[in-house]
Length: 111
Image (spheres, rainbow, N blue to C red):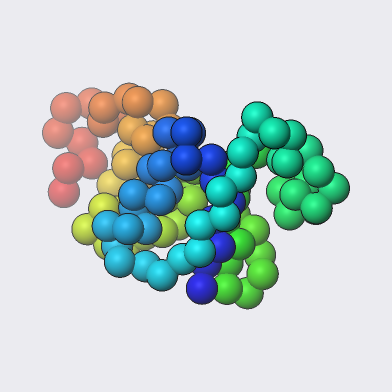
């Protein structure tokens, strides 16, 4: 089961939580109050040296951080990030990361 370290007040954490809920994935949410300094503790920094939430501990123990990377990994192959040709997946990534709507000239990358 995935373990998600997140602060419920953070939009970046919430988008990970909402996608997990929407996908019906089992996960354990560990409320991580960034204002308390817990993300600067040795225990947390061992998990995520950047000291940021969200951080997801995968079933095999690896840690994935950064909300856009997490939702990209979770959404891959789902209706949220379908198995389109590579160009389409990158368009989704650019839109998510930079808020840019289709960075290609009109008509390109649409098929």
